[in-house]
Image (cartoon, rainbow, N blue to C red; front, side, top):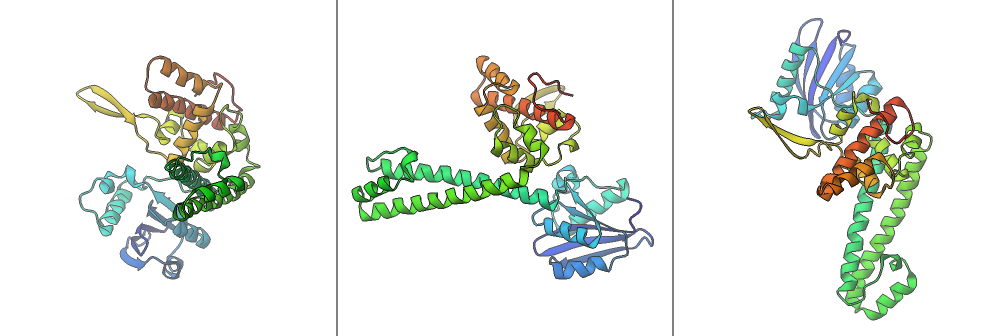
Length: 339
């Protein structure tokens, strides 16, 4: 940190780039508001006296600014605003006020709380798996709509027939012209989504095929290619978590706590991490047959716990197991000792 001459602390938005520039050699502080575009930011960063360090609050569209800093040789840090109550809990929410709060924190502590700065390759893989997740959800919604349409006319059918041409001809003959048009629209959207799913699934498998972590995750009962790829995409660097408990907390699978007067009260899980990561862990427990996490889930059910609570407990256990596997670089073993 001390090697940097120029420090840029910015609040970046889609249209504007509000920042303060600190020159550590002269002590000068300059306030600037720029248009948020490559044509403006590139000459601005090039003109700064190096070495340059750029801090940006984690927000929408920060990615291209980080890539630009990497291209220009500027060090880049992503700030986690959740760890800065001066911003997250402030009643005065303006761009200038947020930058002022970050500058004050930096001048006092010499650093700012960081969020994980994913590389371009990691972001692209994560984008692929998240888009595949959206396609799965869209397909589930379409199947419900198709079932509702044919059930309303007393023509229930299993989803395995929806791609069958003979079944479609039968539906066309039995339904009115208007009703068939509605059903045909739903079926064509289903066809398109299935084609897209195959394309995304093929691309994802190509991206993760040679990764050791991807292979290792599939040694866990219940984790197949899709779930393993989702975990790899959402958590490309497991070693950034200092313990299994920290990783489970990142996944949002730990209970919220309210403490007062020496009494602690546990609530529902925090759900603070990536939704797709929680889905992957929960689904692995749901479909698993013989793993420590599944056994824990069954024990909780035997203790008359609610199904969702039992599933969350199993997913929490699985998250801890996966952390230990990735950090210690071992395949799955039942009763794996966790650090």
